[in-house]
Length: 559
Image (cartoon, rainbow, N blue to C red; front, side, top):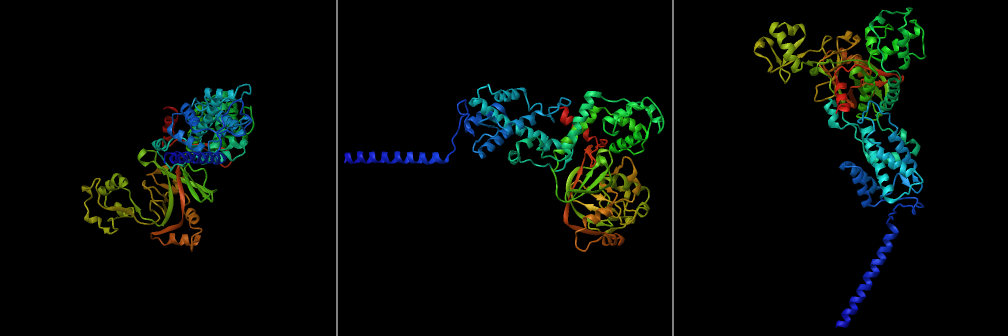
Protein backbone atom coordinates (compact mmCIF):
# COMPACT_ATOMS: atom_id res chain seq x y z
CA UNK A 1 0.00 0.00 0.00
CA UNK A 2 2.84 2.37 0.82
CA UNK A 3 4.61 1.64 -2.47
CA UNK A 4 1.45 2.43 -4.46
CA UNK A 5 1.00 5.70 -2.59
CA UNK A 6 4.57 6.83 -3.25
CA UNK A 7 4.27 5.96 -6.91
CA UNK A 8 0.97 7.86 -7.15
CA UNK A 9 2.55 10.95 -5.58
CA UNK A 10 5.48 10.75 -8.01
CA UNK A 11 3.08 10.65 -11.00
CA UNK A 12 1.20 13.70 -9.66
CA UNK A 13 4.45 15.66 -9.33
CA UNK A 14 5.38 14.90 -12.94
CA UNK A 15 1.87 15.91 -14.10
CA UNK A 16 1.83 19.31 -12.32
CA UNK A 17 5.41 20.08 -13.32
CA UNK A 18 4.53 19.45 -16.99
CA UNK A 19 1.40 21.57 -16.66
CA UNK A 20 3.37 24.49 -15.16
CA UNK A 21 5.98 24.37 -17.96
CA UNK A 22 3.24 24.25 -20.60
CA UNK A 23 1.46 27.29 -19.13
CA UNK A 24 4.70 29.19 -18.88
CA UNK A 25 5.43 28.55 -22.56
CA UNK A 26 1.95 29.64 -23.55
CA UNK A 27 2.18 32.81 -21.48
CA UNK A 28 5.55 33.72 -22.94
CA UNK A 29 4.06 33.79 -26.41
CA UNK A 30 1.30 36.27 -25.47
CA UNK A 31 2.72 38.49 -22.75
CA UNK A 32 4.86 41.51 -23.72
CA UNK A 33 8.40 41.31 -22.53
CA UNK A 34 9.67 44.00 -20.18
CA UNK A 35 12.84 45.40 -21.73
CA UNK A 36 15.21 47.22 -19.42
CA UNK A 37 17.22 49.97 -21.06
CA UNK A 38 20.96 49.92 -20.78
CA UNK A 39 23.93 50.42 -23.07
CA UNK A 40 23.69 46.86 -24.40
CA UNK A 41 19.93 46.96 -25.17
CA UNK A 42 19.90 49.96 -27.54
CA UNK A 43 19.27 47.69 -30.51
CA UNK A 44 15.65 47.20 -29.30
CA UNK A 45 13.05 49.31 -31.13
CA UNK A 46 10.61 49.63 -28.23
CA UNK A 47 11.03 49.83 -24.49
CA UNK A 48 8.62 48.94 -21.72
CA UNK A 49 8.30 49.90 -18.09
CA UNK A 50 7.17 47.71 -15.27
CA UNK A 51 4.88 48.99 -12.53
CA UNK A 52 7.69 49.25 -9.97
CA UNK A 53 9.78 51.45 -12.30
CA UNK A 54 6.73 53.60 -12.94
CA UNK A 55 5.79 54.15 -9.30
CA UNK A 56 9.40 54.86 -8.24
CA UNK A 57 9.82 57.42 -11.03
CA UNK A 58 6.50 59.08 -10.19
CA UNK A 59 7.46 59.33 -6.54
CA UNK A 60 10.60 61.24 -7.59
CA UNK A 61 8.87 63.60 -10.00
CA UNK A 62 5.51 64.62 -8.51
CA UNK A 63 3.60 64.63 -5.25
CA UNK A 64 0.26 65.28 -6.98
CA UNK A 65 -1.97 62.22 -6.49
CA UNK A 66 -4.27 63.10 -9.41
CA UNK A 67 -1.30 63.52 -11.70
CA UNK A 68 0.17 60.18 -10.58
CA UNK A 69 -3.10 58.48 -11.46
CA UNK A 70 -3.24 60.16 -14.90
CA UNK A 71 0.28 59.01 -15.74
CA UNK A 72 -0.27 55.50 -14.37
CA UNK A 73 -3.53 55.06 -16.30
CA UNK A 74 -1.86 56.30 -19.46
CA UNK A 75 0.96 53.72 -19.30
CA UNK A 76 -1.38 50.90 -18.27
CA UNK A 77 -3.44 51.61 -21.38
CA UNK A 78 -0.22 51.46 -23.46
CA UNK A 79 0.88 48.18 -21.82
CA UNK A 80 3.71 50.22 -20.24
CA UNK A 81 5.31 51.02 -23.60
CA UNK A 82 7.60 54.08 -23.70
CA UNK A 83 6.31 57.17 -25.52
CA UNK A 84 9.19 59.60 -25.81
CA UNK A 85 12.22 57.28 -26.04
CA UNK A 86 13.13 54.49 -28.47
CA UNK A 87 16.24 52.67 -29.67
CA UNK A 88 17.75 55.83 -31.15
CA UNK A 89 17.30 57.79 -27.93
CA UNK A 90 14.78 60.60 -27.52
CA UNK A 91 12.35 60.39 -30.44
CA UNK A 92 10.81 63.28 -32.40
CA UNK A 93 7.79 63.49 -30.10
CA UNK A 94 10.07 63.82 -27.09
CA UNK A 95 12.22 66.52 -28.71
CA UNK A 96 9.21 68.53 -29.89
CA UNK A 97 7.55 68.26 -26.49
CA UNK A 98 10.73 69.54 -24.84
CA UNK A 99 10.86 72.47 -27.29
CA UNK A 100 7.19 73.25 -26.58
CA UNK A 101 7.85 73.28 -22.83
CA UNK A 102 10.80 75.61 -23.24
CA UNK A 103 9.40 77.93 -25.92
CA UNK A 104 7.86 80.32 -23.41
CA UNK A 105 8.59 84.02 -23.15
CA UNK A 106 9.20 84.97 -19.48
CA UNK A 107 6.81 87.87 -18.94
CA UNK A 108 6.53 89.83 -15.69
CA UNK A 109 8.09 86.86 -13.85
CA UNK A 110 4.72 85.10 -13.86
CA UNK A 111 4.96 81.43 -12.95
CA UNK A 112 1.18 81.05 -12.98
CA UNK A 113 0.39 81.64 -16.63
CA UNK A 114 3.77 80.87 -18.16
CA UNK A 115 5.76 77.77 -17.61
CA UNK A 116 9.07 78.60 -15.96
CA UNK A 117 8.14 76.27 -13.09
CA UNK A 118 7.56 73.42 -15.56
CA UNK A 119 10.77 73.71 -17.52
CA UNK A 120 13.15 73.68 -14.55
CA UNK A 121 16.92 73.55 -14.75
CA UNK A 122 16.90 70.02 -13.28
CA UNK A 123 14.57 68.83 -16.02
CA UNK A 124 16.67 70.48 -18.75
CA UNK A 125 19.89 68.99 -17.37
CA UNK A 126 18.39 65.49 -17.41
CA UNK A 127 17.11 65.94 -20.96
CA UNK A 128 20.44 67.20 -22.35
CA UNK A 129 22.33 64.50 -20.46
CA UNK A 130 20.30 61.81 -22.20
CA UNK A 131 20.52 63.63 -25.52
CA UNK A 132 24.32 63.68 -25.29
CA UNK A 133 25.52 60.61 -27.22
CA UNK A 134 28.63 60.36 -25.05
CA UNK A 135 26.51 59.65 -21.98
CA UNK A 136 25.64 56.08 -21.03
CA UNK A 137 21.88 55.59 -21.27
CA UNK A 138 21.16 53.42 -18.27
CA UNK A 139 17.87 52.11 -16.93
CA UNK A 140 17.23 54.73 -14.26
CA UNK A 141 18.12 57.70 -16.48
CA UNK A 142 15.83 56.58 -19.31
CA UNK A 143 12.93 55.64 -17.05
CA UNK A 144 13.17 58.89 -15.10
CA UNK A 145 13.25 61.03 -18.26
CA UNK A 146 10.41 59.07 -19.89
CA UNK A 147 8.14 59.54 -16.88
CA UNK A 148 9.22 63.15 -16.34
CA UNK A 149 8.33 64.08 -19.94
CA UNK A 150 4.85 62.62 -19.45
CA UNK A 151 4.42 64.42 -16.13
CA UNK A 152 5.52 67.67 -17.77
CA UNK A 153 3.02 67.20 -20.59
CA UNK A 154 0.14 66.92 -18.13
CA UNK A 155 1.40 69.94 -16.16
CA UNK A 156 1.65 71.90 -19.42
CA UNK A 157 -1.86 70.87 -20.47
CA UNK A 158 -3.33 71.83 -17.12
CA UNK A 159 -1.75 75.29 -17.03
CA UNK A 160 -1.80 76.17 -20.72
CA UNK A 161 -5.10 74.56 -21.81
CA UNK A 162 -7.22 74.20 -18.67
CA UNK A 163 -6.14 77.19 -16.58
CA UNK A 164 -7.04 77.84 -12.97
CA UNK A 165 -9.67 75.66 -11.32
CA UNK A 166 -13.41 76.22 -11.64
CA UNK A 167 -13.51 77.16 -7.96
CA UNK A 168 -10.97 79.92 -8.61
CA UNK A 169 -12.72 81.22 -11.74
CA UNK A 170 -16.01 81.48 -9.83
CA UNK A 171 -14.21 83.60 -7.22
CA UNK A 172 -13.69 86.19 -9.97
CA UNK A 173 -17.42 85.95 -10.82
CA UNK A 174 -17.13 83.83 -13.96
CA UNK A 175 -20.11 81.45 -14.06
CA UNK A 176 -19.94 80.25 -17.66
CA UNK A 177 -19.80 76.46 -17.44
CA UNK A 178 -16.15 75.50 -17.76
CA UNK A 179 -15.00 73.20 -20.53
CA UNK A 180 -13.63 69.90 -19.29
CA UNK A 181 -10.37 68.55 -20.66
CA UNK A 182 -10.06 64.77 -21.01
CA UNK A 183 -6.32 64.56 -20.62
CA UNK A 184 -5.92 60.97 -21.81
CA UNK A 185 -7.82 61.66 -25.02
CA UNK A 186 -5.81 64.86 -25.43
CA UNK A 187 -2.49 63.03 -25.25
CA UNK A 188 -3.74 60.27 -27.55
CA UNK A 189 -4.76 62.93 -30.08
CA UNK A 190 -1.38 64.60 -29.83
CA UNK A 191 0.47 61.32 -30.39
CA UNK A 192 -1.59 60.69 -33.53
CA UNK A 193 -0.16 63.85 -35.13
CA UNK A 194 2.98 64.26 -37.14
CA UNK A 195 5.62 65.04 -34.45
CA UNK A 196 6.50 68.33 -36.16
CA UNK A 197 2.91 69.55 -35.61
CA UNK A 198 3.10 69.15 -31.84
CA UNK A 199 3.99 72.80 -31.18
CA UNK A 200 0.83 73.94 -33.01
CA UNK A 201 -1.44 71.63 -31.01
CA UNK A 202 -3.57 74.07 -29.02
CA UNK A 203 -6.98 72.74 -27.93
CA UNK A 204 -8.04 76.16 -26.66
CA UNK A 205 -10.48 78.84 -27.92
CA UNK A 206 -8.76 80.38 -30.97
CA UNK A 207 -8.53 83.83 -29.38
CA UNK A 208 -5.84 82.41 -27.08
CA UNK A 209 -3.36 81.93 -29.93
CA UNK A 210 -4.28 85.26 -31.54
CA UNK A 211 -3.71 87.11 -28.29
CA UNK A 212 -0.45 85.27 -27.72
CA UNK A 213 0.99 86.70 -30.95
CA UNK A 214 0.27 90.22 -29.70
CA UNK A 215 1.64 89.31 -26.28
CA UNK A 216 5.06 88.67 -27.81
CA UNK A 217 4.84 91.92 -29.82
CA UNK A 218 3.93 94.02 -26.79
CA UNK A 219 6.64 92.38 -24.70
CA UNK A 220 9.14 93.37 -27.39
CA UNK A 221 7.84 96.97 -27.34
CA UNK A 222 8.25 97.00 -23.56
CA UNK A 223 11.81 95.65 -23.71
CA UNK A 224 12.95 98.00 -26.49
CA UNK A 225 10.96 101.19 -25.92
CA UNK A 226 9.10 101.11 -22.61
CA UNK A 227 5.95 103.18 -22.09
CA UNK A 228 5.04 106.56 -23.58
CA UNK A 229 4.17 109.78 -21.78
CA UNK A 230 2.25 112.38 -23.76
CA UNK A 231 0.93 115.60 -22.18
CA UNK A 232 -2.38 117.37 -22.68
CA UNK A 233 -0.90 120.16 -24.81
CA UNK A 234 -1.22 117.81 -27.78
CA UNK A 235 -5.01 118.01 -27.77
CA UNK A 236 -4.79 121.48 -29.35
CA UNK A 237 -3.32 120.02 -32.54
CA UNK A 238 -5.44 119.51 -35.67
CA UNK A 239 -5.04 118.33 -39.26
CA UNK A 240 -2.34 120.45 -40.91
CA UNK A 241 -0.70 121.60 -37.65
CA UNK A 242 2.97 121.05 -36.94
CA UNK A 243 4.67 120.07 -33.70
CA UNK A 244 7.82 118.15 -32.74
CA UNK A 245 5.64 116.10 -30.34
CA UNK A 246 3.84 114.52 -33.28
CA UNK A 247 6.91 112.39 -34.02
CA UNK A 248 6.44 110.56 -30.73
CA UNK A 249 2.74 109.94 -31.33
CA UNK A 250 3.47 108.62 -34.81
CA UNK A 251 6.17 106.33 -33.42
CA UNK A 252 3.78 104.94 -30.81
CA UNK A 253 1.03 104.35 -33.38
CA UNK A 254 3.56 102.68 -35.67
CA UNK A 255 4.75 100.32 -32.92
CA UNK A 256 1.19 99.12 -32.27
CA UNK A 257 0.54 98.79 -36.04
CA UNK A 258 -2.04 101.57 -36.40
CA UNK A 259 0.32 103.61 -38.58
CA UNK A 260 1.43 101.26 -41.39
CA UNK A 261 4.85 102.86 -41.99
CA UNK A 262 7.27 105.00 -40.05
CA UNK A 263 6.72 108.76 -40.37
CA UNK A 264 9.24 111.15 -38.83
CA UNK A 265 7.66 114.40 -40.01
CA UNK A 266 6.30 117.04 -37.63
CA UNK A 267 3.04 117.44 -39.56
CA UNK A 268 -0.46 116.33 -38.56
CA UNK A 269 -1.22 114.71 -41.90
CA UNK A 270 -3.99 112.51 -43.31
CA UNK A 271 -2.09 109.29 -42.49
CA UNK A 272 -1.88 110.29 -38.84
CA UNK A 273 -5.60 111.06 -38.76
CA UNK A 274 -6.39 107.59 -40.16
CA UNK A 275 -4.02 105.99 -37.64
CA UNK A 276 -5.73 107.86 -34.79
CA UNK A 277 -9.14 106.64 -36.01
CA UNK A 278 -7.83 103.07 -36.10
CA UNK A 279 -6.46 103.39 -32.57
CA UNK A 280 -9.75 104.89 -31.35
CA UNK A 281 -11.73 102.06 -32.95
CA UNK A 282 -9.54 99.42 -31.27
CA UNK A 283 -9.93 101.07 -27.87
CA UNK A 284 -13.67 101.69 -27.94
CA UNK A 285 -13.45 105.47 -28.47
CA UNK A 286 -15.42 107.54 -30.95
CA UNK A 287 -13.59 107.60 -34.28
CA UNK A 288 -13.00 111.34 -34.57
CA UNK A 289 -9.46 111.32 -35.93
CA UNK A 290 -8.52 114.14 -33.55
CA UNK A 291 -6.21 114.16 -30.54
CA UNK A 292 -8.51 114.23 -27.50
CA UNK A 293 -7.88 113.86 -23.78
CA UNK A 294 -9.36 110.33 -24.00
CA UNK A 295 -6.88 109.48 -26.73
CA UNK A 296 -3.95 110.78 -24.68
CA UNK A 297 -5.10 108.73 -21.67
CA UNK A 298 -5.16 105.56 -23.78
CA UNK A 299 -1.77 106.29 -25.37
CA UNK A 300 -0.32 106.82 -21.89
CA UNK A 301 -1.50 103.44 -20.59
CA UNK A 302 1.71 101.71 -19.39
CA UNK A 303 2.72 98.87 -21.69
CA UNK A 304 2.98 96.58 -18.64
CA UNK A 305 -0.75 97.11 -17.97
CA UNK A 306 -1.61 96.15 -21.55
CA UNK A 307 0.52 93.01 -21.27
CA UNK A 308 -1.29 92.03 -18.07
CA UNK A 309 -4.65 92.67 -19.76
CA UNK A 310 -3.65 90.37 -22.64
CA UNK A 311 -2.55 87.65 -20.19
CA UNK A 312 -5.77 87.93 -18.19
CA UNK A 313 -7.88 87.46 -21.30
CA UNK A 314 -5.70 84.60 -22.52
CA UNK A 315 -6.54 82.88 -19.25
CA UNK A 316 -10.26 83.49 -19.82
CA UNK A 317 -9.92 81.87 -23.25
CA UNK A 318 -9.04 78.59 -21.50
CA UNK A 319 -12.40 78.56 -19.74
CA UNK A 320 -14.73 78.57 -22.76
CA UNK A 321 -15.55 75.92 -25.40
CA UNK A 322 -12.90 75.50 -28.09
CA UNK A 323 -15.47 75.95 -30.83
CA UNK A 324 -19.15 75.45 -31.54
CA UNK A 325 -20.54 74.37 -34.90
CA UNK A 326 -24.09 75.33 -33.98
CA UNK A 327 -26.00 78.62 -33.88
CA UNK A 328 -25.13 80.62 -30.77
CA UNK A 329 -25.10 84.12 -29.33
CA UNK A 330 -22.33 85.92 -27.43
CA UNK A 331 -22.68 89.15 -25.46
CA UNK A 332 -19.34 90.70 -24.53
CA UNK A 333 -20.09 93.03 -21.63
CA UNK A 334 -17.06 95.40 -21.84
CA UNK A 335 -17.50 95.75 -25.62
CA UNK A 336 -21.24 96.56 -25.31
CA UNK A 337 -21.82 94.20 -28.25
CA UNK A 338 -23.91 91.14 -29.10
CA UNK A 339 -22.50 88.72 -31.70
CA UNK A 340 -24.69 86.23 -33.57
CA UNK A 341 -23.20 83.04 -35.04
CA UNK A 342 -24.79 80.67 -37.54
CA UNK A 343 -23.39 77.12 -37.64
CA UNK A 344 -20.23 78.35 -35.94
CA UNK A 345 -19.64 81.27 -38.34
CA UNK A 346 -19.97 84.91 -37.36
CA UNK A 347 -23.11 86.39 -38.94
CA UNK A 348 -23.81 89.87 -37.52
CA UNK A 349 -23.47 92.05 -34.43
CA UNK A 350 -25.24 94.95 -32.74
CA UNK A 351 -24.87 97.27 -29.78
CA UNK A 352 -26.16 96.37 -26.33
CA UNK A 353 -26.76 98.17 -23.04
CA UNK A 354 -25.58 96.27 -19.95
CA UNK A 355 -25.87 96.61 -16.18
CA UNK A 356 -24.55 99.61 -14.33
CA UNK A 357 -21.08 99.52 -12.83
CA UNK A 358 -22.35 99.43 -9.24
CA UNK A 359 -22.04 95.86 -7.93
CA UNK A 360 -25.76 95.24 -7.40
CA UNK A 361 -26.54 96.06 -11.06
CA UNK A 362 -23.64 94.23 -12.75
CA UNK A 363 -24.66 91.92 -15.58
CA UNK A 364 -23.62 88.40 -14.51
CA UNK A 365 -21.11 86.35 -16.54
CA UNK A 366 -22.78 83.02 -17.32
CA UNK A 367 -24.20 80.86 -20.10
CA UNK A 368 -27.56 79.25 -20.74
CA UNK A 369 -29.93 78.31 -23.55
CA UNK A 370 -32.31 80.77 -25.20
CA UNK A 371 -35.72 79.07 -25.26
CA UNK A 372 -38.55 81.60 -25.61
CA UNK A 373 -39.39 84.82 -27.45
CA UNK A 374 -42.06 87.05 -25.90
CA UNK A 375 -43.76 89.63 -28.11
CA UNK A 376 -45.32 92.70 -26.43
CA UNK A 377 -44.19 91.58 -22.97
CA UNK A 378 -45.41 92.71 -19.59
CA UNK A 379 -42.62 93.93 -17.35
CA UNK A 380 -42.87 92.46 -13.86
CA UNK A 381 -40.89 94.98 -11.86
CA UNK A 382 -38.13 93.25 -9.83
CA UNK A 383 -38.39 93.52 -6.06
CA UNK A 384 -35.27 95.68 -5.64
CA UNK A 385 -36.58 98.25 -8.15
CA UNK A 386 -40.05 98.02 -6.66
CA UNK A 387 -38.80 98.76 -3.14
CA UNK A 388 -36.21 101.40 -4.00
CA UNK A 389 -37.93 103.26 -6.85
CA UNK A 390 -41.63 102.44 -7.40
CA UNK A 391 -43.07 102.34 -3.87
CA UNK A 392 -41.53 105.71 -2.89
CA UNK A 393 -43.12 107.25 -5.99
CA UNK A 394 -46.52 105.68 -5.24
CA UNK A 395 -46.44 107.09 -1.72
CA UNK A 396 -46.06 110.56 -3.22
CA UNK A 397 -48.43 110.23 -6.17
CA UNK A 398 -51.07 107.56 -6.90
CA UNK A 399 -51.27 108.80 -10.50
CA UNK A 400 -47.77 107.37 -10.99
CA UNK A 401 -49.38 104.05 -11.97
CA UNK A 402 -51.49 105.57 -14.75
CA UNK A 403 -48.70 107.82 -16.01
CA UNK A 404 -46.32 104.87 -16.45
CA UNK A 405 -48.91 102.35 -17.68
CA UNK A 406 -48.54 100.20 -14.53
CA UNK A 407 -50.98 97.83 -12.88
CA UNK A 408 -51.09 95.78 -9.70
CA UNK A 409 -51.87 92.04 -9.82
CA UNK A 410 -51.74 89.02 -7.53
CA UNK A 411 -49.31 86.14 -8.11
CA UNK A 412 -52.16 84.47 -10.03
CA UNK A 413 -52.49 87.49 -12.33
CA UNK A 414 -55.73 88.86 -10.85
CA UNK A 415 -56.13 92.63 -10.94
CA UNK A 416 -55.87 94.56 -7.64
CA UNK A 417 -57.38 98.04 -7.34
CA UNK A 418 -54.81 100.57 -6.18
CA UNK A 419 -57.52 102.58 -4.45
CA UNK A 420 -57.91 99.75 -1.92
CA UNK A 421 -54.25 99.88 -0.91
CA UNK A 422 -52.42 102.04 1.62
CA UNK A 423 -48.93 102.26 0.11
CA UNK A 424 -47.53 104.04 3.19
CA UNK A 425 -47.65 100.85 5.23
CA UNK A 426 -45.40 98.93 2.84
CA UNK A 427 -41.60 99.03 2.89
CA UNK A 428 -39.96 95.76 1.77
CA UNK A 429 -42.92 93.40 2.11
CA UNK A 430 -45.28 94.47 -0.70
CA UNK A 431 -47.46 91.35 -1.28
CA UNK A 432 -48.41 91.98 -4.92
CA UNK A 433 -46.80 92.28 -8.33
CA UNK A 434 -46.55 95.65 -10.03
CA UNK A 435 -46.13 95.27 -13.76
CA UNK A 436 -45.96 97.54 -16.77
CA UNK A 437 -48.48 96.74 -19.49
CA UNK A 438 -47.44 96.09 -23.11
CA UNK A 439 -47.00 99.14 -25.27
CA UNK A 440 -44.45 101.30 -27.09
CA UNK A 441 -43.20 102.82 -23.83
CA UNK A 442 -42.81 99.52 -21.98
CA UNK A 443 -39.33 99.33 -20.45
CA UNK A 444 -38.78 95.97 -22.19
CA UNK A 445 -39.80 97.39 -25.55
CA UNK A 446 -41.64 95.16 -28.00
CA UNK A 447 -39.74 91.87 -27.58
CA UNK A 448 -37.85 89.99 -24.90
CA UNK A 449 -35.80 86.81 -25.15
CA UNK A 450 -35.81 84.34 -22.25
CA UNK A 451 -33.17 81.86 -21.16
CA UNK A 452 -34.31 80.76 -17.67
CA UNK A 453 -31.57 81.34 -15.11
CA UNK A 454 -31.04 82.02 -11.42
CA UNK A 455 -29.95 85.61 -12.07
CA UNK A 456 -33.21 86.85 -13.65
CA UNK A 457 -31.30 88.16 -16.66
CA UNK A 458 -32.64 88.21 -20.22
CA UNK A 459 -32.33 90.11 -23.51
CA UNK A 460 -34.91 92.72 -24.43
CA UNK A 461 -35.81 95.69 -26.60
CA UNK A 462 -35.98 99.23 -25.18
CA UNK A 463 -37.86 102.41 -26.09
CA UNK A 464 -34.76 104.45 -25.17
CA UNK A 465 -32.91 103.96 -28.46
CA UNK A 466 -30.68 107.01 -27.95
CA UNK A 467 -28.78 105.22 -25.17
CA UNK A 468 -27.08 102.92 -27.70
CA UNK A 469 -25.07 105.91 -28.97
CA UNK A 470 -23.48 106.57 -25.57
CA UNK A 471 -19.75 105.83 -25.23
CA UNK A 472 -20.32 103.79 -22.05
CA UNK A 473 -23.83 102.30 -22.25
CA UNK A 474 -24.00 100.65 -18.82
CA UNK A 475 -27.41 101.85 -17.65
CA UNK A 476 -29.55 98.79 -16.94
CA UNK A 477 -30.31 96.99 -13.69
CA UNK A 478 -28.55 93.86 -15.00
CA UNK A 479 -30.57 92.73 -18.01
CA UNK A 480 -29.29 93.33 -21.53
CA UNK A 481 -31.03 95.71 -23.92
CA UNK A 482 -30.30 94.96 -27.58
CA UNK A 483 -30.35 97.38 -30.48
CA UNK A 484 -31.86 95.04 -33.09
CA UNK A 485 -34.46 92.81 -31.38
CA UNK A 486 -36.60 92.29 -34.49
CA UNK A 487 -33.56 91.12 -36.46
CA UNK A 488 -32.70 88.66 -33.69
CA UNK A 489 -36.30 87.36 -33.57
CA UNK A 490 -36.27 86.82 -37.35
CA UNK A 491 -32.97 84.94 -37.07
CA UNK A 492 -34.19 82.67 -34.28
CA UNK A 493 -37.50 81.90 -36.02
CA UNK A 494 -36.14 81.53 -39.57
CA UNK A 495 -36.39 77.72 -39.57
CA UNK A 496 -39.56 77.48 -37.50
CA UNK A 497 -42.74 76.33 -39.25
CA UNK A 498 -45.13 79.12 -40.34
CA UNK A 499 -42.82 81.92 -39.28
CA UNK A 500 -41.61 84.66 -41.60
CA UNK A 501 -40.49 88.26 -41.21
CA UNK A 502 -44.09 89.32 -41.92
CA UNK A 503 -45.42 86.97 -39.24
CA UNK A 504 -42.98 88.41 -36.71
CA UNK A 505 -44.11 91.93 -37.52
CA UNK A 506 -47.77 90.83 -37.25
CA UNK A 507 -47.11 89.46 -33.75
CA UNK A 508 -45.61 92.81 -32.76
CA UNK A 509 -48.58 94.71 -34.22
CA UNK A 510 -51.11 92.65 -32.22
CA UNK A 511 -50.05 94.58 -29.10
CA UNK A 512 -50.84 91.79 -26.65
CA UNK A 513 -48.38 89.43 -24.99
CA UNK A 514 -47.52 86.31 -26.98
CA UNK A 515 -44.97 83.62 -25.99
CA UNK A 516 -43.23 81.63 -28.75
CA UNK A 517 -41.19 78.64 -27.54
CA UNK A 518 -38.33 77.80 -29.88
CA UNK A 519 -38.08 74.28 -31.28
CA UNK A 520 -34.35 74.80 -31.81
CA UNK A 521 -32.93 76.27 -28.60
CA UNK A 522 -29.83 78.43 -28.98
CA UNK A 523 -26.82 78.59 -26.59
CA UNK A 524 -26.07 82.07 -25.26
CA UNK A 525 -22.89 83.21 -23.53
CA UNK A 526 -22.72 86.40 -21.45
CA UNK A 527 -18.94 86.91 -21.42
CA UNK A 528 -16.37 89.41 -20.19
CA UNK A 529 -13.35 90.00 -22.45
CA UNK A 530 -11.40 93.25 -22.19
CA UNK A 531 -8.88 92.25 -24.89
CA UNK A 532 -9.48 90.31 -28.10
CA UNK A 533 -8.42 90.14 -31.75
CA UNK A 534 -11.15 91.11 -34.22
CA UNK A 535 -11.92 89.57 -37.62
CA UNK A 536 -9.52 92.06 -39.24
CA UNK A 537 -6.63 90.89 -37.08
CA UNK A 538 -6.63 94.03 -34.92
CA UNK A 539 -6.03 93.89 -31.17
CA UNK A 540 -8.89 95.50 -29.24
CA UNK A 541 -8.88 96.78 -25.66
CA UNK A 542 -11.83 97.85 -23.51
CA UNK A 543 -12.20 99.35 -20.07
CA UNK A 544 -12.66 97.05 -17.08
CA UNK A 545 -16.11 98.44 -16.27
CA UNK A 546 -16.86 95.97 -13.45
CA UNK A 547 -13.28 95.72 -12.08
CA UNK A 548 -13.14 92.00 -12.90
CA UNK A 549 -9.65 92.42 -14.40
CA UNK A 550 -8.43 93.70 -11.04
CA UNK A 551 -9.67 90.51 -9.36
CA UNK A 552 -8.06 88.41 -12.10
CA UNK A 553 -4.76 90.22 -11.60
CA UNK A 554 -4.79 89.36 -7.90
CA UNK A 555 -5.68 85.74 -8.68
CA UNK A 556 -2.99 85.23 -11.31
CA UNK A 557 -0.09 87.46 -10.29
CA UNK A 558 -0.36 88.44 -6.64
CA UNK A 559 -0.91 85.17 -4.77
